[in-house]
Image (cartoon, rainbow, N blue to C red; front, top):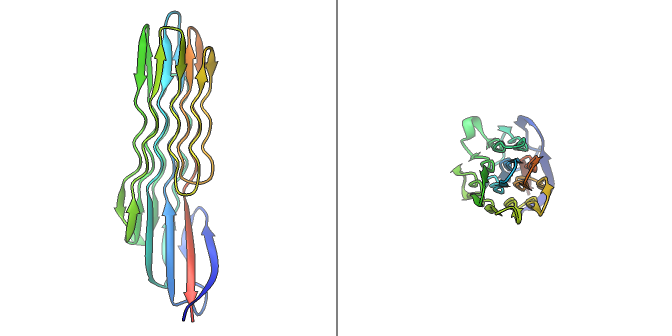
Length: 212
């Protein structure tokens, strides 16, 4: 029978070294979530930004050994009128041989005098994993004829909630994601206003060791 050893939550990048006596490892990872788009309206326009995709999630199960790893960075919040940053990739094993997970795509920005629509950012893709799920797509944003605008909500990951999009009849920034691997929310503005998107969150790797 196997007994579960202490679970390690890895940070940054480096080399994972198993605890002495460990036989198997179960690795769960998620890539960084993307950042929400920033809104920038002027005069008679509305501006809305899409929410952001979550980082891809994956699992690996295998013999306990040392493995190189890197955790994906958070996607940066989009400045006014700019697309948010894409989340960084999370890898486990040399060149991602055991896990290779892409970050969520940043949210876009749209301006229009009557109606505007901004698609949410796509989720990150899984390149390598024993079990893997692509990140969810962020919610779309919209604006209508200076009556109001709504930033899209960021996508959630298995380890965190997506940031809420800005809902506004004036101007508001998107909200940051929470936890690990989630996307930020999109900003929104009408008439004259500049707002930033919400930042995504960093990825993570959680390793559970099993020994007899």
